[in-house]
Image 1 (cartoon, rainbow, N blue to C red):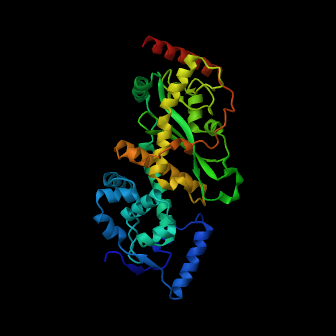
Image 2 (image 1 turned 60 degrees about the horizontal axis):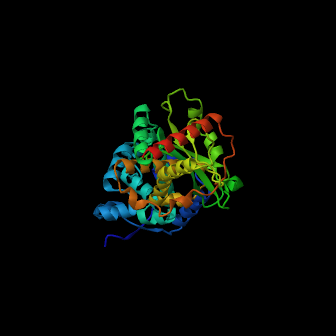
Image 3 (image 1 turned 60 degrees about the vertical axis):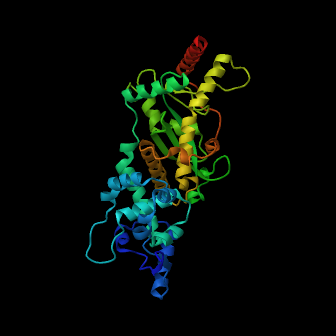
Length: 388
């Protein structure tokens, strides 16, 4: 039988001793000390042995993707990119260090499922502390090594290509992407901070995304507590500062993003009209087109939470660790899009409900230049529609 139990060694493995730091959560530290005492007293915790070494290699493509939510090809790309950085330095004594492929598989399993670290530890034949270290170490390495490679703001040529595709599909000219925020649920309040409780009454952390026509994430911003308005998150984000003080570097002339009604109008941000029963036919047509193309960012969020189910609720002891974890999921999402790794198979059936938490009206004043630009855009779209 390929699955069998073995007795675990000391909870503190030697490579973990070398990297132990004060950021480890109090409950994991307490558990590790208790476990070490129990082992000294002769009690051993049974684990499944050789899951990575014997079981995973025998999985076919369907089974591998079912468990790890990535194809083997995508996994191999990740291993090639991250393997050298995940490899522990060689030593002459002590237990063998966890290999890069085992660390990566532990991380992907954790991201793909909602199991506890204790359950993952039993499956992979390691300690809960080792699972925590793998997840933390791999997510940070993934962000450090691949963030600038896979989440890239489009240059002017790319913006032109994106806007052409959006125009052909919707009739909206000069749009280069869509912005929205979503809430990542937390299992409890970090440090008891009630600011993380959102309007629906549960704790969350906010993720802001800018995506293009192909569902590629072009910018991410994560970390604000759940109680904060989307517009405030946006106003404090690096992308706002870049666009607000843009001198033609980040946005080609005339280009803009599309957001929902929570965002303020500006020359680089178009939003729908508030429907209060007094809209003209031209304004209604504009709203329909904006609503239609904005589904791209909603589908992106649906894919993130559908594929990487850990994002439905995070066990958060450290906000910085959560931000690394969420950002690493965004990088994995883009890798899946680039490799055409069955995006449609993992979309949430109704992603819209994932975003409507702090769905307040815009709290900032609309820029008069944005108002004028939207009015001109409405007229342009209406004239094109009437001609056809």
